[in-house]
Image: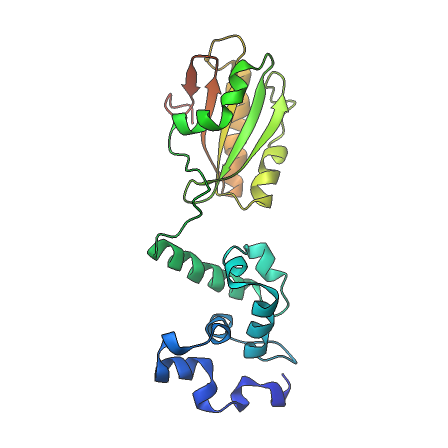
Length: 226
């Protein structure tokens, strides 16, 4: 790093960590707080300059919603730094019970049906994925397939592609049976098994697979098929 830009050339009282100890964390500026999380800058830019550059381009509110992939794209933020920042932000959110109020929580079959009620009247089978974060908040839902479920036609790659794009931790599958009988067919069971096994390899849980008709429902989880 350029010696003139090095954080070590600052007086002790102006270095973020030393300032935190001497004056208290509440007296640090936003850039100084972020600088402590970052730990270091990169050649040609010290950590305070890096923190200032990030917060100039990204508001604090926006920064709170950045994903791991967003962070590692920023020059000067390594994988380790991104993980540290995300862990600190998540711990703060949990301690303050802060969450995005517009995100519906999926805790029951009833919650799943509320997101897929339109499928009850479809005359063909539709498969939809409901993608959740670690707090079981729905972050995304996506129609995945139209037609009779068949292990030869439905590839887990299509399902987990969206999970990776949206950083989902869990998935709930839901599809309809126009026949009115909610019991799973052999194909339903085989497809679900295939997807569950793929999820295990990727570290993404399939929490349930719900089959709905106009008046009835079937839960793979409740019936111990997952």
